[in-house]
Length: 315
Length: 303
Image (cartoon, rainbow over all chains, first blue to last red; front, side, top):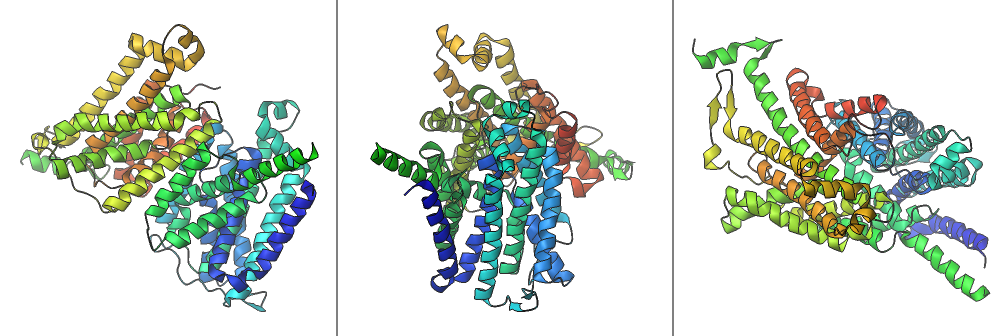
C-alpha cells in the first residue's frame, strides 16, 4: 500500500464515519466536535502550512458566531444566509487584521495576534449588539433553503457535516494548489521565497484571510447549532484550545486537526462536570507533553511510523 | 473653604482634579507592574530566546503564595517580600532545568507553546484548590492610610508600590548594564559559544536568568497582593496586556521596557478619566498604531 492509497483510505474512512456517526453518537456533541475540527483545519492552514502562529483566532471564530447570531435573531435572516454573512464578516476582519499583523514576525506575530484578539474581545464585551456579558440567547435554528428543518438534530448534523466537508476540502485544495506550494516555501525559507520573486506579504495576507474566514464559518455554524453565542468564544482560552488541537493532532498534516479537535472536545465533554478546572490542568499538561515528547502530533507520528515500517520492508 | 473641599471642587475639562490625580496614580501603579513584568520577559527572551507565557502565572503564583503564607503559616508581608520571590525563583529553576532547556535549539514558537501549557497547568491547579473568587489580603500596617500632598490624598501603599518597583526596575537595569556580571550576560546573549570558550558557565547563567525573571514576576505578585483581589485568573489577563506593552516597546531594551510600561500605565489611567469606555482597549489600539509606524516597536531593533 503506497501513501496515495493510504490517503484515499483516510478520506473514505472520514466520509464513512461522518455519515454513520449520528447513529452511534450524540448529534450535538458531534456537531460541536465538527465545528472545532473545521476551526482547527482553518488554523492549521496558517500554522502548519504557512508557519504563522496566530494566538488570536478566537476573534474570527467569535465574529462569525456573533454576526450570524445577530443577523438570524434580530433581522430574521435564514440560517444559511446568516452563516454566509457571518463568514464574510470574519473574512473582512481577517483581511484588516492580516494587513496589520503580517508586519511582525515569529514570536511577535503570536503576541500581537493575541493582543488584537483581546481588543476584539473587549469590543464584543462593550458593544450592544453582542448582548455583552449575557451573550446572544435563543437564536432560532429555522429552516435551510425553506425545506430542511434544522430543529431536528439529525438533519442539522448532516448540514454541519456538509459545511465541515466544504471547509476541509477547501483547505485541502488550497494546500495542494500552486498557491499552497508557495505558502510552504514561505514556511520553509521566507527570504528565499522573497528572492524568487514571490510577494510574500501578499501570500501571507491571503492565507490569513482565508484562515480567518474558515474560522468564522466554524463559529457561525456553531452559533446555529447551539442557538446561543457567549463571550467564551472570543476568549484567549478558545484561541489556546485551537492551537492545542492542531498541535496534538499534528500540525502540517491534513487529518491532524480533526483528530486533535475530536480528542480535546471529547476530553472536555467527559471531564467538564466531574472536574471543571482540572480540564485546564490536563490541557496544559498535554501542551507540555506534546512540545517535549512528540512535536509531530498523533497523525504526524503515525505517518512517520508508517513510513519507517514501509521503508524497512522495501529494503 | 477647607483644603479638602478645594481638592474636590477644582476640575479640569469637567473632571474633578482629585479623580484625575487618583486615576493617574492608579495608572502609574499599573504601569509599574507592566514595567516589572515586561522587564522580566525581555530578560528571559534575550537569554533563552523564549517568550515566557507563564510570566503572568508566575506573578499570580507570587500573589497567591503571599496569601497562603499569611493565612496558613502566619508569614508577614515583609517576610513574604523576601521569601515568595525566592520560592518562585526556585520553581523557575525547576522549570528551566526540567523543560525549557530542551527547547533552545528548536523553533522559538515551541517555547511559547510550552510556557502557555505551563500557565494553564498553574492556573488550573490554583483554581482547583482555591476557586476563582478573590482572596482578600489587607494592606500591611505601616502603609495603611493616605498622605495629604496638598493637591490630593495619596494612599501610602500605592506610593510604596511605585517606589519599590521603580527601585527594583532600575536596580535590574543597573546590574545588567553597569556591572561585570551584566556584561557577561549581555555577551552571552550575543554569542553564547564564545562566552563559554572564555570559561564562563553559560548554562548556569541561563538557568539563573530564568530564575531571576521568575523571581521578579513573583515579587510583582507580592506587591500586587494587597492591591487587588488575589485570584488564579489575575495573571493571564495581565500577561496579554504586557505582551502588547512589549510589542509597543520592542523586546531587548531594558530601559525601553521600563519607560514603555510606565507610560502606558499613565495613558490607561488618563483614558479611564476622559473616555472610560476605551480604558480596557487603549493599550491594544496604541499597539496597532505602533505596528503601522514602527513594526519592530519603539525601542526595538529591526532585524
